[in-house]
Image (cartoon, rainbow over all chains, first blue to last red; front, side, top):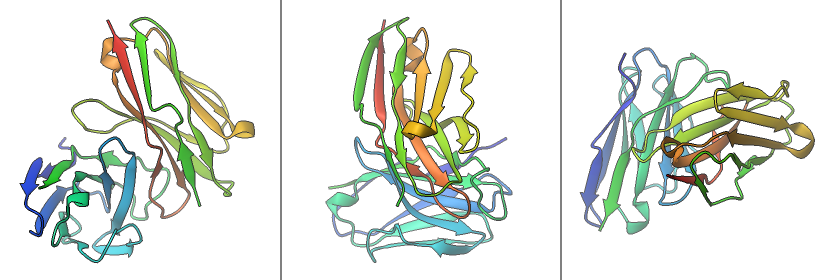
Length: 117
Length: 114
């Protein structure tokens, strides 16, 4: 079956512009996670959704970052007034359980590579 | 707070050599889960293994093996008879029980040279 998909795969933008990154989780997966991976670094947690709600927004780096999820499906991560330090690969993952559990494997998408010039 | 340390930034080995990737974790919780993921050049994260804190049995899967030692808070990963296709960045990660995200190490870049 289809895995987690993300679009666009690559995005180049100018500093100060807004960008929207999209994630389509595996059908039926109620939990959805956004992570950021800067060049040569590990993954940083940004936000997760349980259904359409985001109980944990602690990882969002600043108020320029926001995310939403609709229909317990697609999620968009929006970065306003992008800065060069926002350049990174943004990874989305989804997992099955109604309540996110350590027992459930998170399936990762291929990521969106964002470059802010 | 939880932390995962992968001290080896890059490792380079010749094909058919064995290689061990180190992972040390920190948590005060007694219930937690440890993971290894592989990130090949394509970028997608590939799940390799999950181990819970109550199961210290070592695991072998083909050429891969994992050594979990709570006494040293380590969860090391060994690839036996490495192959060029093993070249990737490998991440160790930790999650607590409940609604928490994965905490990743910074990864170890493994290059296997033919």
